[in-house]
Length: 275
Ligand SMILES: NC(=O)c1ccc[n+]([C@@H]2O[C@H](COP(=O)([O-])OP(=O)(O)OC[C@H]3O[C@@H](n4cnc5c(N)ncnc54)[C@H](OP(=O)(O)O)[C@@H]3O)[C@@H](O)[C@H]2O)c1
Image (tube, rainbow, N blue to C red; front, side, top):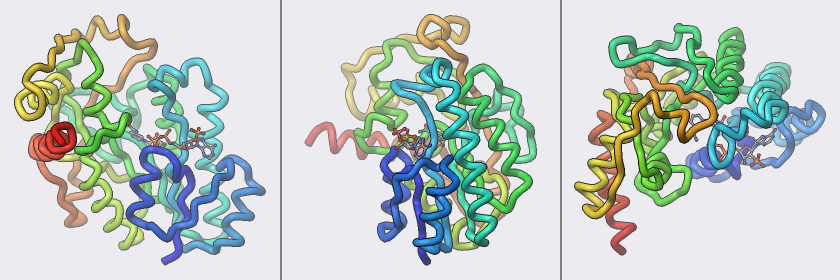
């Protein structure tokens, strides 16, 4: 199977490259129709995986002040890839997000629910493309708050470890080893449509750090951040939601319960931090 990964140098791209180490990794702008067409004509892939997108540095607040770049990479680029892949009958896989919803555990969002969170430009751009892709034969992998047991700066655990105050709001999260396994299985099946890829159950950043204290570093300190005080530390709003994993489960693809996954990641982190 010949694979092309766009955005292979990014956080998620690096992980997808471990799944498909022989993949071609062009560094062209995904919104450049001619450059994308040339890559597809020369590589002639069976599968294209889009890991490119603007997520913002240090965080999604960046997108509030860089709206053109955000739309260029998060909406125009994926549309170019859809069109160019469709023309050549190439299976297209896109990395989407569940950060397009707002709600609690009582209302897990399924893949057929329309976005209802518009509090950040990042989420608005991702919600737009999420809905547009529904009309095309595309596998749209919707992940949320990815984490694992590495010390990568982009790992959710590494990020929240640096915060003095943490929200205690329940959220769906995605354990990266489970994500990669699920994505590989869906790709093998040539599945299309949106799929929520999150671990069953819900977790809060505050609870993760309580477990971090228990498993990794008892001296770690942090405080509670109340939802109404979020604007003290963030420019844009943040999506909080729980997604339904039923569609993925119905494909026979299992993800670990989220607390088990967090504990596994923290045990791995403990070995790295103590070595
Ligand atoms: N990480 C998360 O928490 C998370 C959660 C849910 C969904 N996702 C989705 O997963 C995808 C990848 O995210 P990530 O965390 O891996 O982000 P990342 O680390 O910022 O990587 C994205 C990569 O895409 C490149 N890129 C941006 N615009 C491009 C363009 N127009 N053409 C070609 N390459 C371009 C970036 O290069 P530059 O750095 O040069 O711009 C970067 O190398 C995004 O669509 C994101 O929305 C991520």
